[in-house]
Length: 48
Image (cartoon, rainbow, N blue to C red; front, side, top):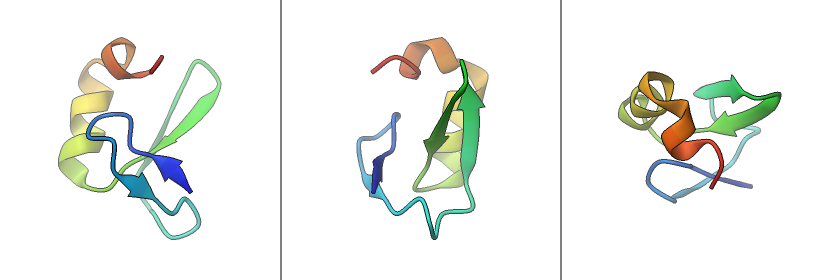
């Protein structure tokens, strides 16, 4: 399980199709809105 870096929700990375990579690390998201927010400004969320 992973934590959505935007909203903090727990996400099953095996089931989620929403993911992005930043600084060599994969991030998984609960919704397209969270993924979009991360993709617009990954430094805001990428290091939490």
